[in-house]
Image: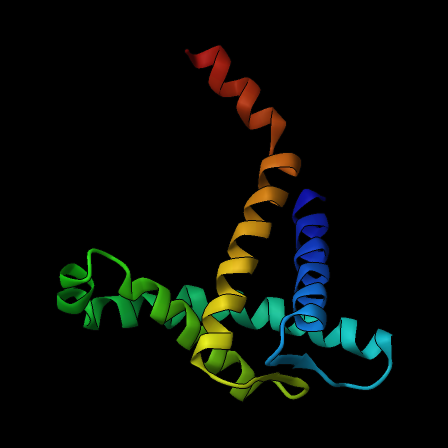
Length: 129
């Protein structure tokens, strides 16, 4: 149940980011259609982060090492650009917009995870200690 709540909140975060961040848009039509597109974007980003991002990280280990890990931000921006190319109704103008989108999404998703996270898991960890 918490997974579904987090998923819906992530879609709402995507809606907010696209509304306020210049260079990112959800232009599917009505607000309900935009929310459906945001749900699809959340699924798409999750799948891309699961399957494509590890390959990109693997192929760019040397440059990631040289930049002390900062190149991972570029990879996150590229993942957002790939999602924008694949998902109709979701548009990102460029790498900088994708990068800012991914950073804001990561920070806000962290807050959602922090406040809605699995409290039973925390209780179990305290018992084990």
